[in-house]
Length: 341
Image 1 (cartoon, rainbow, N blue to C red):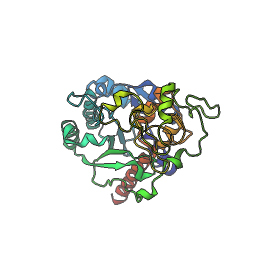
Image 2 (image 1 turned 45 degrees about the horizontal axis):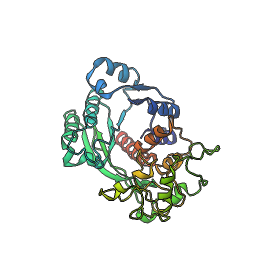
Image 3 (image 1 turned 90 degrees about the vertical axis):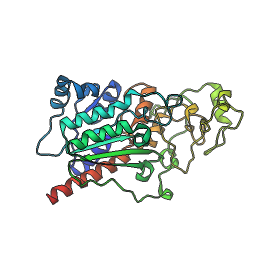
Image 4 (image 1 turned 120 degrees about the vertical axis):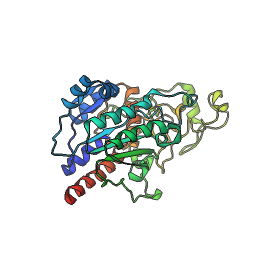
């Protein structure tokens, strides 16, 4: 999310990043490398409940100018809300409580604007208690809240990715970003990765270490070779027999379509057995570079960490082109409010 705000800020001088907070050290290393701002490793539940942690992390690290509006962005882990929690739907996930902790931080810091992103299921009846608690805390502090489900493909991301976007403001001037793109204008897989060189599974390309896929077993490669090119599905009877017994896995080992946006890129996009994450023509899963481009990351963005950690960061990220649209819409609202005021 910060990359979109940083980009809009660099072009317009409208935003300045103050810092980042996360519990994951690798993600913080990536953040610090790309944005050169302070970072702090902390559990936001401690920030919300412990005065000492709040003072050390928020007040000291994220010093703000009281004469300028502050935007607080929070993107809690989405896995607890996800509809893909097979076998765990009846069990509460403690990560869902993080949006309530985030709301408590908002109530204390009292920024002019708040932006939050998550999977659409967060807004559903199943998880109403968490989102309702979030809204109640902010509304008690006088915030007006708007939410919408946006498709990242409508904002130039080469990926069909539906996400809930929530914006809270201490005024009523904010409008959600809108797009004029229709499906015939969507950026495609070919647009995003068609120019990348051919590589074998696990092959390291000296010119771009990010352009590397997982090293597949021979049995995995044989399954992939049986899948028709350009959007094909795994033929019945091919691959692990367990897949024939379970509904909901029809996409595994499937190939991406060249001339459509990709499916949602997740932290498991490294693994062809986790979804439609096979290259449209080459007999392998996606490389780190391909996954990053399908999320709309520029090639110059640096990811810290191991192979799996990089895929996790890519899959869990807000697509930068979508966050750019959110940041631009927010900046327009801020400037209009200043003019009106």
